[in-house]
Image (cartoon, rainbow, N blue to C red; front, side, top):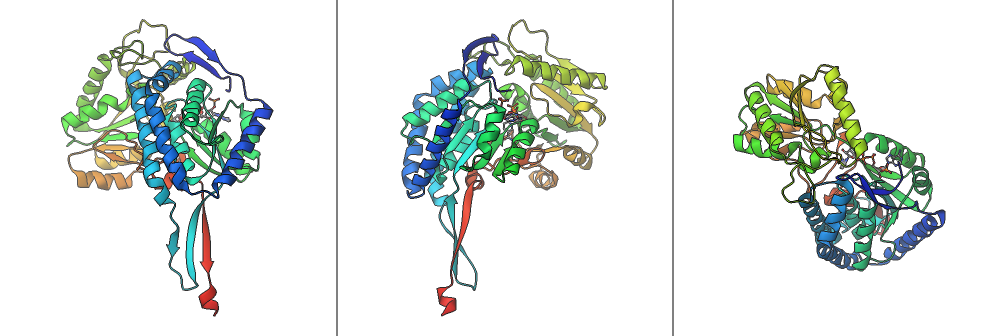
Length: 460
Ligand code: NAP
């Protein structure tokens, strides 16, 4: 898909359309970004850290405008859009404050001479991003690479072109040099051509297994370093000693934040026998109390999905699940709105043969599994092609830490809901991808660890 249109999922009305970038504009953009990379190689990152603070300030000044286009294009609750802009402001400030030190040269212990490695920029990064966090996904790649000195080209998802354009404008107006971040409306073929251009040195994708496999193949074919931040089917393990109020708090967000369209939200809720009925009833209460409506309104708590096609796909997955034997414990009543609303649903009795057992359900669908003991919980948690995040709720922190170490995922949260912060690495294993974004690990994703060894003394 690469027909760039703004469609409000609350009304299903098209309110803006964008043409694909021309070959000439793409060439000029790659050239501009590459010239900037060469210029930056001779400049200290200190200057860029000051500009990054200004970029954060400019997002603050344009917070309402940014959040509004996010909600209009992909339907998330306006209050969540504001939270996302604030998170991005924090990410920019974080890398402005700490990024330069992260680039210090690293001394190495060797008897062969005076050795160290430099952390250097590698060149222009092609970033391909999804719609579910339309600003955060851009900033996760942009902010650290801006400090490193890697300019970024952006191909955003087809349904958030206005978010991409506004983010580019805000970054530019804050004083970022021309070419620091260029938004392009690319078809898949144009994207493949850009990736193969020799001036492109890295490829970062966040998205689904489908998008990831295709773009990783293009990157691999051209021997470009890549990071893949893909989907998840994250387990939330609830132990018998889980604190009740904490459990309630965690379940509150588990399948409703961003209308369940979070890569690391708890999609499989694995519950020990004693807590099973309680979890089902808590979730039922949470779902039953949701208020569908215009996501711009403060009183709305159930947003539409991002598009009609997403609703169709999720409806089909749930239908297949039920045909294969899943039980519906609860489903929200009919919603009298014309937008892409999906009725939140709780499914039980999902066995391994069920087609959705190993699929990501991107929306307000809670799959609840009952297990008899901790080892069965761990086995079930690990029985997945995905390995992004996971959570454990238990009053025994030492036991939870031990369980966490046995879960095959990139991230585990103990006694809390899914989390992201500028200082914490984000990423997964298995079909959830490879590489990390954010933190020092994310900043290192596209650097050249350039070894320099001075053998003068050992040769005298
Ligand atoms: P998607 O369909 O894979 O799209 C992601 C990006 O890749 C979009 O810009 C898309 O462009 C592009 N794309 C897709 N297929 C492509 C292809 N064959 N060739 C070239 N480009 C292609 O993913 P999505 O549905 O937008 O996003 C939701 C997924 O992202 C979920 O699976 C979610 O779990 C995952 N996600 C992961 C993380 C993480 O950090 N691990 C964070 C957020 C979301 P078009 O829009 O033009 O198709």
